Image 1: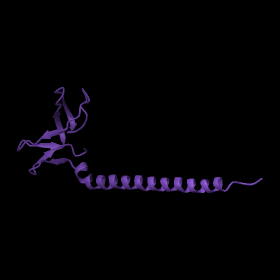
Image 2: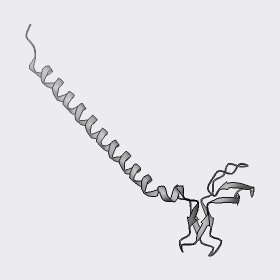
Image 3: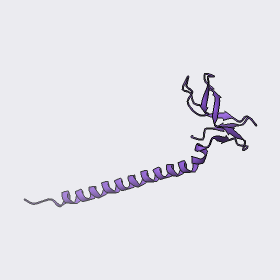
Image 4: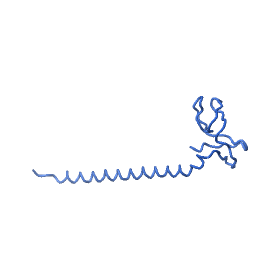
Length: 107
């Protein structure tokens, strides 16, 4: 039985293309994961700090008594934690010294 040369030629090219796509996709996903890791490491001092800094540099305690902006429930804890009553999240807190807003460092 004679074999067709076209069938054997198509299989290796398709295999090489699939491997190339897999390698490129893996490299891309690895690069994105490394980029996210670098961003996280750069933000660790802020995330682990007990104080937040307003745009003018004033220190604001990150832990204490906070009032929910949605339901006005007062709770003890981290400034950007979920409200125990309505599960709302604060997008910013206000500096007690100058009144400027401080964004959530996790976002």
